[in-house]
Image (cartoon, rainbow, N blue to C red; front, side):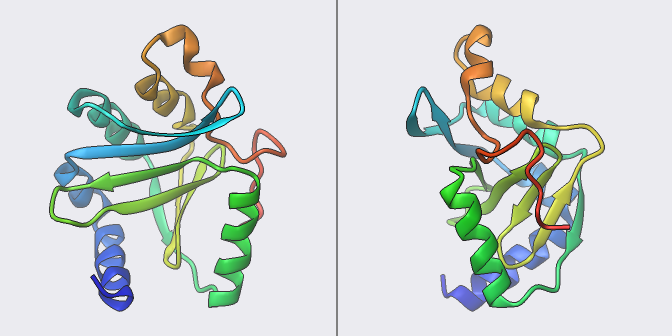
Length: 150
């Protein structure tokens, strides 16, 4: 898929976030655990738990320049921020980057904000053992609510 087409698809998915989330079949998570960077595909049941938590968010389009997006994503990458990739099974996935306890960025498009943090629900869905959930690093290193996008 071309970059332009992917941006158009992402913009459409975000405009009807609730409708898109109902179509998600698979979630892949990228996170830190014990100093290692990990990537895990979640089962259908665990994916549904993540989607349920994300459904409580509100999307806001951001009018940022390419440079501002590149700078912010570079900062988050340096902080080893977690990512979620939501796939409806059609060769497309919506990339979400954890930018704070109550905010996920949709690169080049906008952000999803939450009144209550979805992070614990996402950690719980990723962890095989509920006792291990606290060790799953999704937030960028540098603070519990490291949010520079406001």
